[in-house]
Length: 242
Image: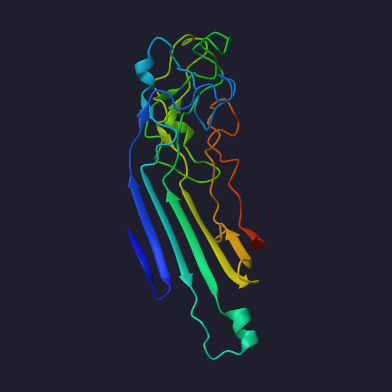
């Protein structure tokens, strides 16, 4: 939905509801197996059962809302020449992006499935646990995004060589909410030149956008969120057009 300028205001609103499924979303972007790519391994847990890899894509965001707006602030018609030069002609812009969480796969680096150690063939870090309850039930806190009790690690002795029943990318990470604002004004420096003053704020609400949690069941920090996106940033800039 879009709205053209009316009393100096214009905005655009877009909403997507989508679903994307695949067998692998990224292949050898950072080398096979040893390095995970955004919470997913690019190798199948069981190379003889590729159908088990069918699941949500890494970029599958079921709901995404984007809002952009710009507003030309009203002019102070009774202002003096100096006051008008400073106060009139400003434009306020805003962009907001809101999205549901990124899917990821819980894995077990203990390699219970005993896959070969040559990454380009079958790799490691692809072993998964058994899923025994809903992994998206919570508690969804920074200290424990997923509940370890939702997963059952395979026993490296009694279940060596077996594969867990957890599907690929069945767990959802935190959603994303971000809003940026900018305030700008142009100063004419002649017929062909102008100077633009820009005041910008990124993540103006200083909202914590968390990354996916530690997804290795063998890690002591499994289920804990260890990273977040950038905090609020302020930027002042001058831009010359000529």
